[in-house]
Every structure is written in C-alpha cells, then in structure tokens.
Length: 72
Length: 355
Image 1 (cartoon, rainbow over the protein chains, first blue to last red):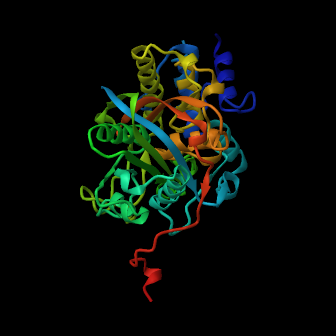
Image 2 (cartoon, each protein chain N blue to C red):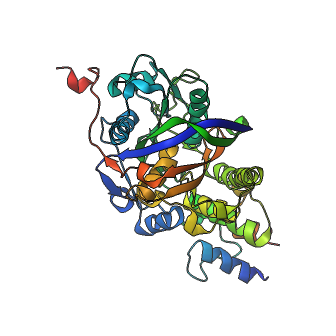
Image 3 (cartoon, rainbow over the protein chains, first blue to last red):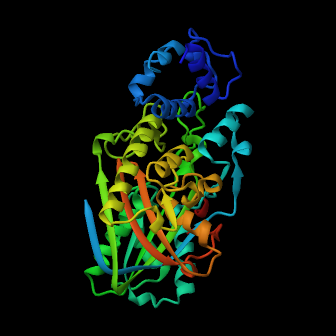
C-alpha cells in the first residue's frame, strides 16, 4: 500500500476531504483529531494492519508520518 | 471467576428516567461538524438528564414502586435490598437504608450499597442472587443506577478532553429476584485494579479531599485505555462464558452490553459472533447509563412487549476496571414500560427547604 493510499484511509475514518492530510501534517493542527478520532484510528490499525495501539503510542504521534510508519 | 447460584430467578425489571430529554445539538457549544462526528461515532444523539434535585435513588425508587405494584409483591417478603451506584445520596448512611424506608420494606431486611459502575448491574445481580439463595427470604430487590451526566458535566471541549461530556445519561433501575426451584444463574466476573485510574473521580473523598481547581465532583476518563480494555476483555469473557455454558449466539435472543460507546459495542458483538441485530442499543437515546445500562436497554426493547420469554446474555464492563457476564431468562411481560418521573425526595437538608 502506498503512503497516499494509507493517507486516504486516515482521511476516510476521520471524515476529512481528500487531500486534507499529507505525511508532514502536524496532528495537533487537525481540528478533527480528537478523542473519537483516536478511537477510530485504533480500530483501523487493528482491523487493517494488525497493530494494537496503546495510549502511550498514540501520545507519541506528532505528524501523520508517525502513523504511516506503523501501517505496514 | 465462575459463580453458580441455584434456585433463584429474575422475575421483574423496570427503569426510570426524568421527563426531560435533551439532544446533543441543544446541549453543545461545539461546532456543528464536531457534534455530527460525535453522534456518528458514539451513537448518542441525546439523553435524559436529572433535574437539579433528582438523584439516582429517586429514579430507582420510582422504578421499584412501579415494579412492586405491577407484580403485586407483599413487601414484607423482600428481605434484601441492594443499591448499586457511584452517585449515592450521601457519603453516609448507605442510600439503600433510606430506600428501605421510602419503599416501606420490613425491618427484617438486609440493605447496603455497592460502589460499582458499568459492571455494577451484573455484579449486583451476583451478590443479591447469592444472598437470596442463602437466606430465608422470598424476594430480593436490586436497584442500580447513576446520574453520571452530572458527574461528567465539565464542559471540556472534545479536542482537549475526553468524550464523556455528552456521553452519559441519568437513570435508575429496579430488578426483582425470587427463589424458584430448578432455576440456575451462572456468572463470570473479573477485576483489574491496575487500571483504577482509567475512570476515576480523584478528588473530594478522603484520599484527596481538595482538588487543584477547587471543583471536587468530576470524573476523568482515559478513553483509549477504556476502549482497549473493553474491546479486549468483554469479548474474551463472553466467549469464555459461552464455552463454559456450551452455548453460542444462537442460544440467546439478545446480547445486552453495557452501553459504553457504539464503537466498543460493535466490536464486542463482532468478536463474539453476535449479529448486530441481536445487540440491544439504548445509548442512542439514553446515553451511557452506567450501572443501569443493561436494565434500561431491556426496558427500552421489551418494555412494551408482553409475549414470550427473553433469553438474555448480559455483559457489564468499565470502572474498576471491573467486568462481569451473566445469562438469564425473563418473561417479556415482566419487563415494564419505561417510567418517567420528576419526583425527588426531600430530606429537609436541602438549602431550598430551609426558610
């Protein structure tokens, strides 16, 4: 899966317009990246990538690329 | 841990809320997109909120009065009353004692409170069924509820904080148990106290009487820790329960989960092979009703039904961390329609009553 496809998945679960996110987007600047968005991310990572995200890992995410690295 | 209790049956259930239903849109000061997203993800579109003087015990009392009248129960034969809540009327005495006199129960009655939340209905059922099986009395009355909407009314923004601000609703329930030869209840129960900080009201009691900002009555929740706990442990326990009882989702009419959050509930149903149609959802209109969520969901679905027997599989999970599963059957006609009450108990201490 390309980075672009992974970003599209994030945009889909967070209900963002296509092209809103880039790898270097700072998550703190995304209004929609709130508590519910983090839960949606947990579901996506578990279902599609077999990755269990903990609170500490999520706290460590600064940019979109930090998430992309785990979408292996 | 497995508990098996013989010769006890659930013979009635009722739930009460206030007449005041508020939509999230009306309550919120967030932007429209945030509100829409919250409703979609959590499933909560609104909730019933207690009026300023109503407490959990008022809802439980109203539900119990309806239930005892409908079942035409001789109150002198109720020998146990257990009140499960985290929003009791007082630090002391136990609210169960106050409820005993409000309901006109006999002095020959064991009454106490249990401090549990989302798992509290199932834990309470376990405790009361165990005691009923071992005492000479005929009936036990389990009252469970919370006014968590008030506890979570911190007005924190979604972005800054947790999803609790709009998630919770206020209600109370009453469940009646009777000794009956041949019936059996099985419970599986677990606790993980290492997660005690995941949902906590840290200030205002004896450990930390004072808080940094002067406010004492609020709850903080680690959404992610709770989500991971619930989606891991609830399916694990439910699957273990079905294995122990040699049952599958086909053996039950409904899966009654604690109404935590629709995302959690859907994952639990999926990971226990329950079709979503069998999973009861009340939180869309009632919010997360804490220890009343299982009875509220049953009342919501079957309160107006009068035929047949409902085979339930129930799982409560949350604050503690604590979780518990039980299966029981109940006649649809023994589940009462939803009770609305604006009544409250005047004990003479409220400042408004002191002229």
